[in-house]
Length: 261
Image (tube, rainbow, N blue to C red; front, side):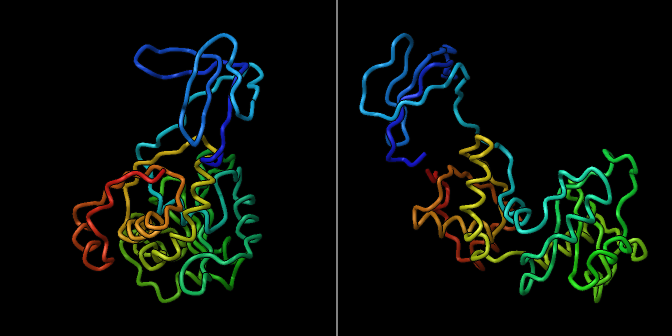
């Protein structure tokens, strides 16, 4: 809803979620703020009237632990969370024709699969990924974020670590994080993705987040904050080990502790 709108919601249950646990059946919202709420007959006001048809209206949610950088990168590749088999995953990888991550957007990085829910609980393999995409580097990331599988193009020139199995293409923990570091998006990339992230969160009823952030995302947030262009309330936590690097290298200021609304 644009912040200039004036809307009266009525005809349902409105949970106020205050200390008194009040329940109303209408609420008037104007310029993005609650003007009034109550029970009984709603007032005659200059507003668009939206009938809830008996449904329940609740305040929006705050996600108390989110990684906006992870969400931005997840939206730049195939969504593997709905895959119910290894074949589903491979078809999703094969269908991805859009730019992805890394230099020139050549890397295809899919996120969110969980083979433990599949009838055949084996991970996809390097050979499986090579069969559907031999040219572009591919990374298929598990839902946990700690395990992934790479194809041959992605493993080319990669120095394997203790958590890498070159035959199967399986990487875990620090070895997988090293691949992610090679593909880190720039602040410009992240700023461009933020409007889409906001729409994605709004679709799930989320309007405020606590972001365990990265230096690049912090710089991106400051850029959109200056333009007043992000319809989210954001609170950032930056790991101590990255704080000084962020403030120096990314030229982030210390005035980022604020709300974007």
